[in-house]
Amino acid sequence: MKRSFKSLISFFSESWAELKKVRWPNRKELTNYTLIVLGTVVVMTLFFGSLTLASPL
Image (cartoon, rainbow, N blue to C red; front, side):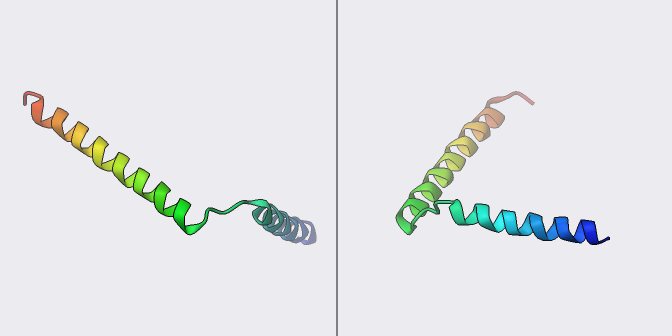
């Protein structure tokens, strides 16, 4: 039981250390990435929707 508790504590402390190393995007980058994703979703939705409408039933 103690061994698994120690390994759990170790896991969370190592995870926290790795999260400190991450370079998080600033607000402008995050906005740009979000717009790119939303634009891609809209384009793909239109593409697959047009394929569905064009296919014979």
